[in-house]
Image 1 (cartoon, rainbow, N blue to C red):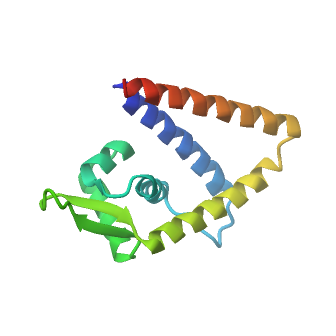
Image 2 (image 1 turned 180 degrees about the vertical axis):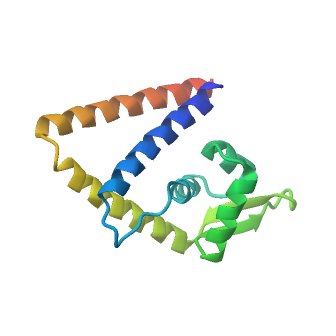
Length: 149
C-alpha cells in the first residue's frame, strides 16, 4: 500500500471512530448523514468536477458501490453530473448549491454535538485531545507532501 492510500485509510479510520462516537451521543430523533455520504460531499466540496474513478480511490470503495450513492444523491439534487468537455465519455461530479448547503448544515450539526461531547472532558483532557489532533494533522500533511514528491 502506498503512502497516499495508507494516509487515506488512516483518515477514514479516524473519521469512522469520530462518527461512531457521535452516533452514540446523538439523539434518536435526529439522524446523521452516513459517513460515506458525508465523506463524498466533503470531497466534492474540495474537488469539484471529480470523476467516479478518483472518488472511489479516495473513498476506498468500488466504483459500482459509490455509483449507487451518487445516483441517489443526484436525485436528491445534492450532486451535479456533467460530461467532461474534453472526453464526453467521462462524467464529472460536483456539489449543487443545495449540496453545499446540506454539507454545511451537517457539519454545523456535528460541531454542536462534538462540543457537547467535549464538555464532558476536563480542561486538561480537552487540551491533550486538541494537541494530539494537531500533531496528527501535521503528520498527515507531511505524508501527503512526501507522496507528491
